[in-house]
Length: 293
Image (tube, rainbow, N blue to C red; front, side, top):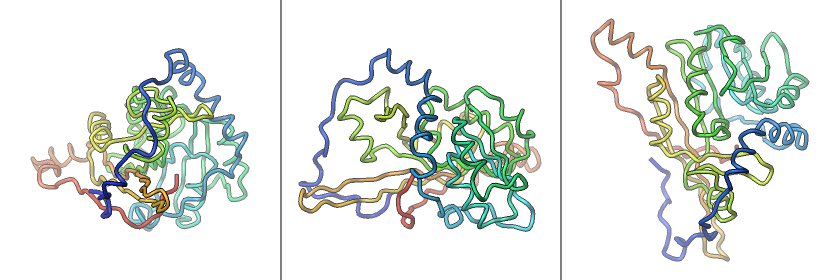
C-alpha cells in the first residue's frame, strides 16, 4: 500500500524530465560491471564517511528484531562507512554485527571509526556475488540480515547469488530487513532522461556506481524463488512540492521483511501445515521516517 496523497492534479501529472529512447552501450555496460568495485572504492576515497547520514530509524521500524536478553547476531550487507551499524550498536549494545562491503576502502573506514570494537563488530570486504559468506561467518549463525540501499547496487542478474549467499549464514528462524529504491522514484526519472539506463529499472550514476529500482513483484519473486517467505512488504512515497512550477516530485522506497522458508518447512513437517497457508502477507503503509539512503 502507498501513503495517502498519491493523487496529483492534472497539471502535476506531466513528467518532470523528458524520457530518452537510448541507453548505455554494451561496451559501457560491461565496463560498469567489470569495474564496479573500483567505482565504489573511488566513491569512498572521495567522500570518506561524509556522504551518508547516520541511520537512526532501524530501531523505530524494526526494534523488535534487535531487542531481547539473548545476544542477537546481525549481518549488515553493504556496511559502507558504518552509518547503519554504529547507531544500531549504540542503541542495542548487546548485539554483535558482522559488517561486509564490496569496497575495501569502506571497510577501512569502519575499522578506523572511533566506536569500532572487535568485541562488537567484525568488518570485512566481500563480493557477495562471488565470495562464499560461510567462509567468513559460521553457517546458520545470523539472526538478522540488514540490507539498506545495497541490493540496488548489484546487477539484477546477480541478485539471486546475493540472496542465496546470505541464506547460508542465516538461522532457520532468521529475518532479512530490507529498505531500497522503488520504481517511480524521482531519481529514476532523472536517469532515464540522461541516457543512463543499463537495463530495465537499472541505471548508472555519473560517478559510475549503479542503482536498481525495485517493484514489489520483482522483490517478492527474487526472495521467494531463493528460499524466503515474505512477512512484510511496504511501499512508501514522500512527495516534494514545487509550487512555482506546479509539480510534485515523488521519492519512493520499498521496505520489506523476509523470513527463511526453512521455518515454514519445519512447521509443515511438525504440524502438517505451513504458516503461509493461514497467514497473509502484511502490506504496510509507511508514513513516519523521512527518506534518506
